[in-house]
Image (cartoon, rainbow, N blue to C red; front, side, top):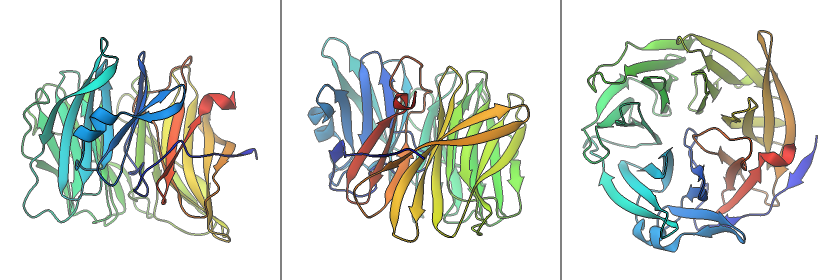
Length: 366
């Protein structure tokens, strides 16, 4: 299997700076490529230029003390970001100024958090076809959603699911004329979905849809990509955790909302896979990436895989392994919420627990 050692593109004073699992932290426009990472003082915005990935000093100073974990939704030259910390959520809007050739912060909004909050692990953001905004997050043992008609004024949260495990998470994503919230519930060994149709009242949601139930199929690892034909794929981890049994589940949703679950990636005595993410190229290629821990020497690598559908089967082919010189953790792979375009760079990112950030362009595989 081909291997490549990567040098860091940037370093921060904060470990696991590309966390967390369902979040998308990068985006591209005709004006450039950007990445948001966590740091001790708050989140940081980096831009790709001829010298590498360069911090955007003015924005970063404005973001001091904001929550560190970020999920990004891009629409044209506008970017909306939900920043997440323990019992703290903020939504920031940025707009790219063509004249000044840089992003400028338009507004920062702090979302209402219930007083009984003990912890929030992660959150994601999307915008529907009516240009309304949605944020979804786990809080204590519930999944909660915040809504905004225009991104300026946000609702108090309402509960989508309750009685989940403290370890469970969710994600929210835009589909055709609807948004989907998906979450794990390790207490019931289930993965669920609820749908909101664009234009309905904000608290009108479908009944919970069981994506899969039983056999320890649920865990707090979820990452999604939505295809141009309206289908969606989710890379997820289960809780089986047995040698020679699959650790991951590829969950495929067709346009009509029907789900197919495909187990893959065996756990073995020497290596433990974790935290899968997924994205695709508009030309049709599908990529999955995840971290792998070598239990014998405590070293990690990032496994890059291509997923192909052949007849009614899905084939997983490992293409390359990304390694670093450090001995500690490498992981938290992330990319864009948007798909990759054929004629543009296709960056994925990951980080280690020392604050180093790494990138890899999937174009190098072709």
